[in-house]
Image 1 (tube, rainbow, N blue to C red):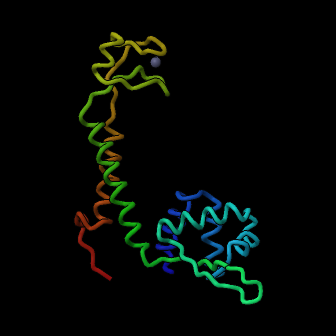
Image 2: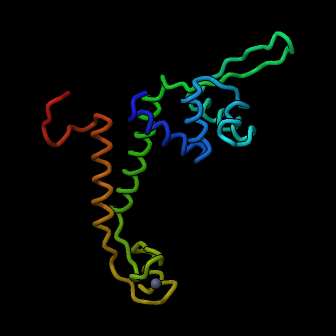
Image 3: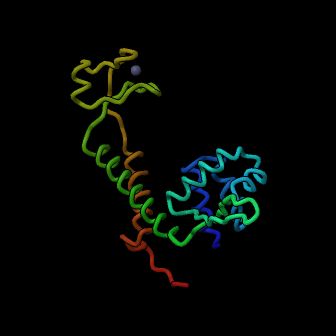
Length: 179
Ligand SMILES: [Zn+2]
């Protein structure tokens, strides 16, 4: 698997089930095909947890299994493997969702003027809210001033632009030879 895809798969695994899911994905990558018990043994993660992670990966279309019956015992074994065919599609969907979220945040930042006392961790208030508190911080009572969110707005715009370029929704600012 290409390194970039691999990095994205690890990120998705992290979102799905944290460090343990990352360990499961890494183990499956190495083992190619394994039962939940084999993965548990290799990673040291409890088999119930491994199973839960595998089902979550399966839900996302990132892991698949084969059911094989042991002819002697009659028991079924599930052999799991990573499924990366849908990975580009999943990555794209995640980026689209992220883009939507960032645009909503940008909208929120630019459609309101915020007021703040200047103390780290104290709330930012909209104009209406600030009016209600007579322009005094509800926590410390200091006078509220206009909150300068230009750096947040810049950061959001930059991230949106990067994502739009990655998604092919916007052209790269500078021409570059392909290849
Ligand atoms: Zn305050």
